[in-house]
Image 1 (spheres, helix red, strand yellow):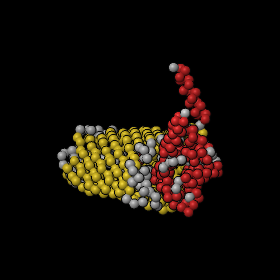
Image 2: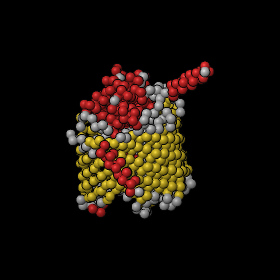
Image 3: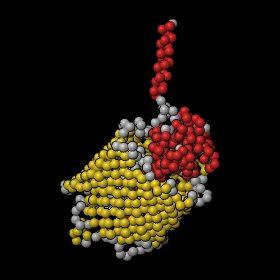
Image 4: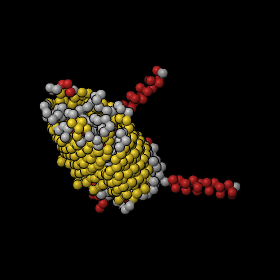
Length: 176
Length: 397
């Protein structure tokens, strides 16, 4: 009996340890939807996430917020809460690079691109939420978002040789 | 069978009923976003046939209807576009044309694991390929397929796949392949195909800078004549991590072009792009690159091209965005060409400038824009100048 308890305890400890080691778990659709409605739920979704994973999670939640068709005021409040939660988890040293990745991810999402008020609310929330680094964080976000969405801004081409389109390499600096 | 269709119909109806929609902000249902739109414009064109002599001015109307679709989840991001458009000239009605196409892009995963991007595009176009820039295939630059005149009616097929991964904290790797195919309606123009493979690694050197190594190989086919050229390029360079107001990605190296006639040529190769977020409302971009590609105009010939460009945008007020872009391009044909029984070395130099202002009306579904463009081609075969001024409106749900 004693041996059995030791084995059971060992299994529980091992499972707990493995879960802790596993860290981040990709969120389900229901969890994403829930976090969009209740920003407090975002904390659990970002547990153990790398900046890359965090930017994907936040982008997906933002896309669901865009689908809620909130008024501009309600949208700003929701985004402030989401960004506040996010910035409290992302370490200060990673905030600028996180904002860059988030700007790129959000720029690639049609749901977000089609709601300019959501983007400006995010930039505002980053400015105020990131404290003294707010301006740098918001600028990094804004630039990455603009870069991700402005692929056609330089499409003009002499002789309209349209298959040769600047910029090249399919990617801008700062994009992952 | 009927039961299955009924079930599918009911599910669709439920989705539509539960969808949130706001004019100008798209139709949302869970991870899906649909964004139908219409674009109408009127344009004055100073030289509709882009000719050196007998210039003819005219006014034309463009009308486009399209649908953008997006799907966004943690692992998958999908964007799709379908459009149909029609152009009608006031006087030169023989130039009227219709166009259409689709662009599909799906991105799966993230770079901490593996990120896979798959792209497909088809466009039947005449004049400027307005959606060409949206058809870029991630990670692989688009050079090599060239159409000889923007007024040529053509079918463009593009497809590609790229795979990217952050191998370590400091090392990123991207591998990509793209296929381009262009078919001209005019039988005197050569149809081209292009297969490009590219490998790019970025190794972090400092907190803000990574070193780049890019290797590229391409096979270019003239499918009309069944001839083939090969192109190779290798570059080393730098890229910033995008955390400063000024960002840069660029490299320089060598290229080799093996022409269909057996001639081989080695030269300098470069590719760079930079951007500057002047303020939160103003952004500037600039870049340049060169390469070699087959000609659709002359058999057994190709061009060494260089292109330099600048662009910028300014959010002047919350409802007005202005933008400008300019490009300078040089095409240097590799072999002498014949023109009016003369044999000559052909060189084209072109400049194009475009300025545009977009006004977002209080009604979010309406955007009004005006655009002016100027193009000047300086060639020892044929010059032309063309000015266009347009006024248009975009209605989007």
